[in-house]
Length: 244
Image 1 (cartoon, rainbow, N blue to C red):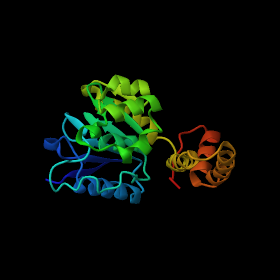
Image 2 (image 1 turned 60 degrees about the vertical axis):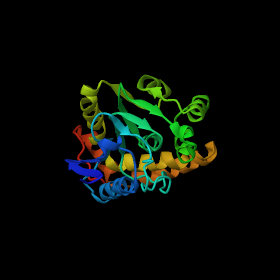
Image 3 (image 1 turned 90 degrees about the vertical axis):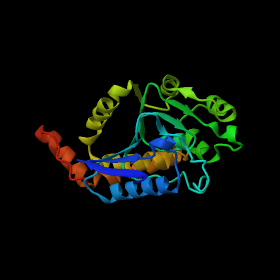
């Protein structure tokens, strides 16, 4: 059985870590499988969003697989695909699982999930994922989580802004589909360019960001989606996005 399941559902690419018996812990096969899934989604013009999740209902991802020969700590957490990625957090998200979730654009979690960085309990530290999580979690809480290794609840994760929504397990896919429905009818070009622009300006000063964003407005205005959006507005109809 493959370590990562990749399934195209209409205009959404589902990537599922398929290691329920190991709490969906990451090994080399999982990392490469996720990368392959994201690469395939990027190359497919029909894909509008990506859902990243774990098999079963015990864990979204428990982090690195610490078993012998698993290849832990030899991969790069910084890889991220271009498509819009939503984390479907179906269970606990720990260690590298937290980093992977943090790299997603949005996250929906079940209310019994726990989130943590337990690396200090096994003699290491969440070095790689700190760069991702420090943009999402306030410093005081981030330090506490990293230094103590103790997890937080889904309710706390929602309060911190680590996830967008928290729902009972039975409502996870309903909420996911609701969120996807709010994204998939929008301009794919605007979303791609907007996501790119927001990422680029994160490390810029205000003046640099303002100049860069001004240039992006001009670029986006030249796209076919922008022309279709204006025409649809004038004609008072739903737009038919060409995605270019």
